[in-house]
Image (cartoon, rainbow, N blue to C red; front, top):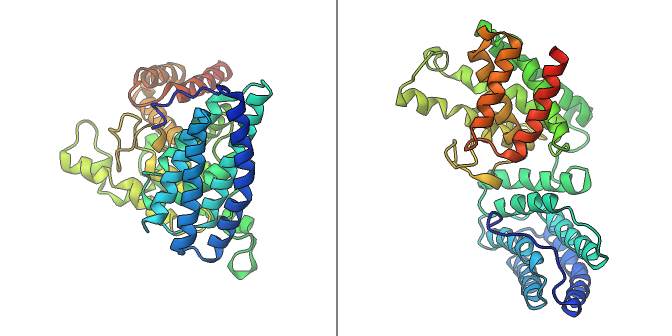
Length: 365
């Protein structure tokens, strides 16, 4: 849906515009109360139904008041609530956080429009794409995406994240540091399987973190670090003749290769606090054109961390292929190949990537 919507943040009917602002102010306390009640009774069909109807009413009011830019956001929330109402999903507190924060963001944007102030259209478009993905994402990915949305909108993790103190009296920070050490150890084991791999973990981590910073820091750096360490560990579960083979591989070998993201995602998904990293690993071989694996996701269905990881992974692979050219020439060739693959990487992600590579080339010189 988001690809079809041309967002225009305008006030067509000033009177209707103000009416909708008043309506949102009236509905906000009711929605907050329902969300709070659902936290205590997450399977209540009555509460879910009431919440769905309120959101549906807001969408209808937005259309009647001719505030059309509000409609796609509320429609996306309605899609998420529809999955709850059908029983496909069970309500979690972070879903209520998303609902309230999106409505808050809508009110903020309406205030900006009313005051003739500029609206960050690109940011709002990104938000819409993420919201729309909640209607179709696999059930296991919904909570991680909701948490990422909360983090992006308020700068903190959603309430469904791991507790601050874990078992044995260790703090959440201590547990995460121990987890990262384990992840890095596994990555270093992978490096030892092939001489050309030595040093790849450090290279990949540096590039991923720089790309994330250049892109505005959308992805949690700690989650991205875990994903960099773990994304290819599943390759070690494959026969070496499959993943170390040079040249063309058979259809059966390709089928086995396509399984490796899910294997590691299954492992990470069982470790509390690594939901975002799990999603990055699971999706890092997806492609915006829908030709990737394992789910064939497209566009906004792919999380930002997976898009970063896909660029980093592809860059490293091409660098290795052209290593005989020397560092500078192989970097130039790798960057050129990635920029030519417009079906595989979106320009919005290639632009910050190119800026990072340019700085790396300057430093190397």
